[in-house]
Image (cartoon, rainbow, N blue to C red; front, side, top):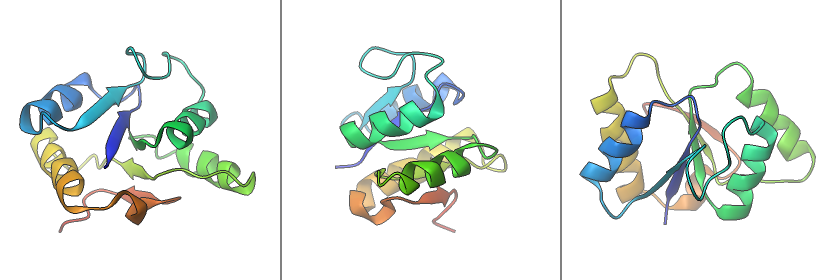
Length: 120
């Protein structure tokens, strides 16, 4: 089952809106209970996602691709990373993430960065 970890730079509104739309969806956010604490370095966030089987949702286009390359070069893995689009509204993004959750298998995004939207 797909589970999402939102990085700390993703607006908390995404978590609350996702849970309103899909109450069974597991969505955690960096800085909240049961997730890495605020200011956790990105490489450690990737390690947490690997160990806990969460797909990372981020808008960090600048450094996350390199962090993923470094992570993979160490023989590590991640369930996947979804990169938010600045051209999508919150509603469009929520719809996209809910669709991915409902219609995908978690292995589809293994060790990859997926740039949203993927349904267009």
